[in-house]
Length: 119
Image 1 (cartoon, one colour):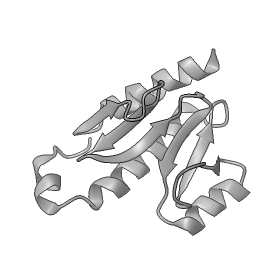
Image 2: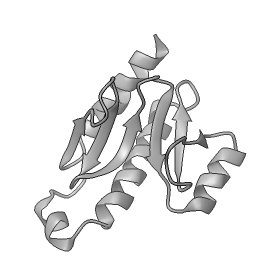
Image 3: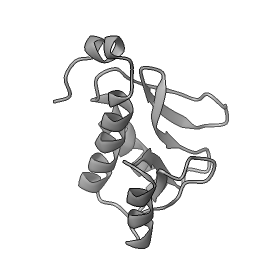
């Protein structure tokens, strides 16, 4: 039950981000959140947590060593998976918005300019 509740929290947070869209690109119940066609958050079909981008591999490793995240399987090493039950809603919001901002900042300037500012 905690998975569904937390998936709802992640979806509620991501819905508020300008230009954020959700899809299930691989089928089978994934929630892949994207901005400008680039993924910034993913909840796997196993519903164990949410994978997000960090600033770099060192940042990801730090979160893992601190016990705040786990290695995100199938993703680059700058991504981590935040397991359900590990993070409160505020920490989840921080991880999601950081990932969103990192991905958004790498989009072409024209695409970025078309997006509303994040509140």
